[in-house]
Image (cartoon, helix red, strand yellow):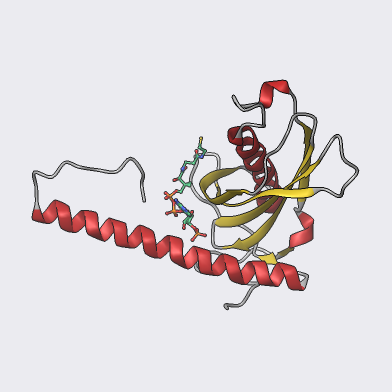
Length: 193
Ligand SMILES: CC(C)(COP(=O)(O)OP(=O)(O)OC[C@H]1O[C@@H](n2cnc3c(N)ncnc32)[C@H](O)[C@@H]1OP(=O)(O)O)[C@@H](O)C(=O)NCCC(=O)NCCS
């Protein structure tokens, strides 16, 4: 693991670090009939929107300015969410690079008709990039993980970051090879790897 208080790269003057707790955010929402899919439970996309909103709030708070979603990965739905449930979307900065931040999100549901503790119904990891007024990436303060849990999340986020970069690079290389080898091959995936 690298020095947690330093950005991964970049020669720009370093911003002072900010603790995880400074931007941690919970967004709570009661699910209604308009949030359902054809089965009568809550549509996954409704939860994904809340996840993106909560992560965006954290990214904006941490970076003290505009930030955009660069990627969303590992969105897991563990249990269905139902109409009437009070959903809590808890988000925090797990890791920071030069201009990007990994935001970890946990989704909990308090069942409207049960007096049980909130159940974890989902989780996700998103990468946000802080941008300037022209939409160009700008530096973010390094996050300072505080608790043992924050430190574990930082380390795990570094593993995900390494894998994302490696996957992107490998796909780019493969496409470059295919383009070079078969100029007539116009097949392209919809994603940007
Ligand atoms: C995200 C965005 C600003 C990146 O711009 P870019 O020109 O590729 O800039 P860079 O390559 O310097 O990337 C900036 C940072 O984002 C990270 N990043 C870029 N694309 C990424 C991706 N797909 N997944 C994960 N991280 C990504 C880079 O690793 C880099 O991190 P670092 O500065 O911490 O090392 C740009 O692609 C963009 O504006 N995308 C659209 C975002 C948006 O509109 N989201 C809402 C969708 S409706």
